[in-house]
Image 1 (cartoon, helix red, strand yellow):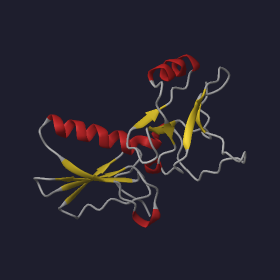
Image 2 (tube, rainbow, N blue to C red):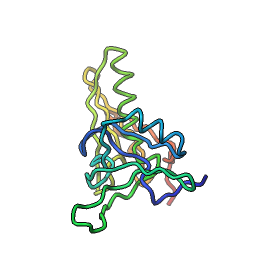
Image 3 (cartoon, helix red, strand yellow):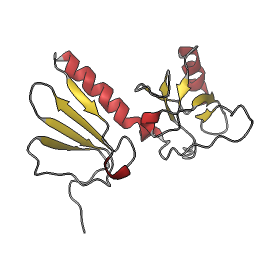
Amino acid sequence: MLEDRRRIQTAVLGDAASEVPLLLPLEAIEVDAFRREHVGDTFWCGLLLGGCGGQLTTKLYTDRVCHFAHRPDPDGLPHVCGRRARDVSSADHLYLKAAAQAWLAGRGESARFTFTQPDGLPVGSLLDIAFDRAGRALRVHLDPAITPVWSDEAVEPVLGIRCPSTTTP
């Protein structure tokens, strides 16, 4: 089954400002299990996903990719959402933050996390992790459009999988 890039594959759980990402399974049988697991939960086009904040529902198909979809507007008009990233990687920054927080907590450490948006780039392009005790920080690059700064001794760049280590003119 081919991925339909126009459909929403990630959402957040609970409310529009949530940092708890969800990935809807692509296959119908897995969506049935997902629905049973999330009975009573609500899904949102999260603000930290670059979304509109609208509520989403699950769409189950046997002939194409299952996905999240916006709930219909009360006035019956088509829902308009400017969210640019809708694929499985669109919540990577939220998964990364949750994993880093859990790892640090397991070590008795903590940090401040910030989703930095330079020059109007989409939320999730950068994740800044400032360590409380060390006075140092990591800047995780998830958008290849942002050139890493290697000369800042207080902030260490970490490159995501799609980010090149050097840029070519």
